[in-house]
Length: 243
Image 1 (cartoon, helix red, strand yellow):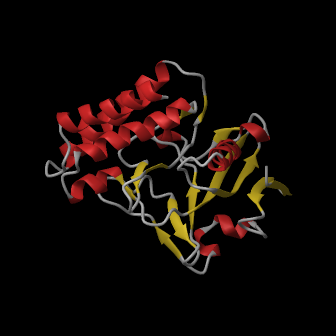
Image 2: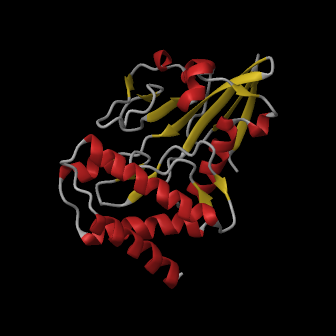
């Protein structure tokens, strides 16, 4: 464990000194960096406008402010009920990512996280190391019709996470990312955790399937078919049998 916790006036900051040797509140504001770029994307892949690329190449970071989605997010945009520091969304995600990265899982390496209390509520932010050359699965399948081998490898890669007990709360065509070598990475582990095997594994696969079908309705030119999904499932179950 390489974490350091520094107390602030209204909360705390958790960070890895091996990645960021000094941290301050300004680093959790896009304007606190010399370079910042709002994350944008096609087919609604830009999220909720709460994510920025910050810092300079060769080492860049991703800064994300926690923001609610759905109908409840229209009422309470970015505040969460405080029930202890270790249960804040940012600290929980940071520690999960730290554990997964230490075990060579394809996830972003966590750099820093913070929470700010306001009475019984808090807001939160997280900074992760940017993974070079990755694109959302939705974008990757828009470029060309991918091979059966690719879809098989996607399924096998998802099984690797499931076999390790990694629950991703929002497995979709945007949080699944593909690098230059065609390897799969997972982003955004808000509400993620480690769990014993169970129904959740099938449910996350179903969530990804719904997301891919939805993306296809946004742009019918995308390359996704029933056969692609069957190859993904084949890869998943082949990997589970050989484990």
